[in-house]
Image 1 (cartoon, helix red, strand yellow):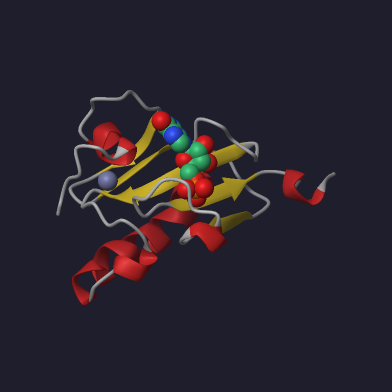
Image 2 (cartoon, rainbow, N blue to C red; image 1 turned 30 degrees about the vertical axis):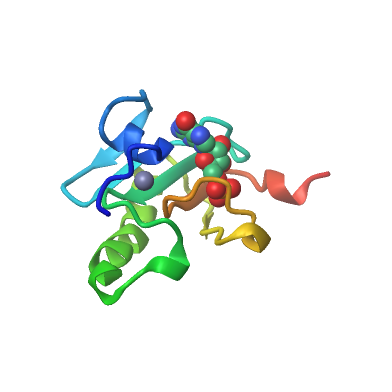
Length: 115
Ligand code: 5GP
Ligand code: ZN
């Protein structure tokens, strides 16, 4: 399935739910996380609906590589200079809440080390 009408990220990709977009091309959308837990927290998603990393196929290799390569570029464009984390949560034990593959990219001072 390339688009899941019940998927919140597919709705964002389709423009049915607003988002603060950072980058978009034919394959990938990047937008700010609605509930950031770093000073800069964006999500990179493939436009094709892939429920989770356990569902990826060889045809997804290019878009996943593009997301990896985009992350440092977008962090630089957003003014992040001190480094960042790239995280993909997979499945219930991985803490995945939205079942459309997404890479968290979190930059800025390390708030996840506080508290
Ligand atoms: P997960 O736990 O699945 O890896 O992370 C899902 C992420 O999606 C969370 O960080 C959450 O804040 C974000 N999120 C959920 N719904 C929305 C939404 O409607 N808009 C945006 N921009 N982010 C969302
Ligand atoms: Zn989706």
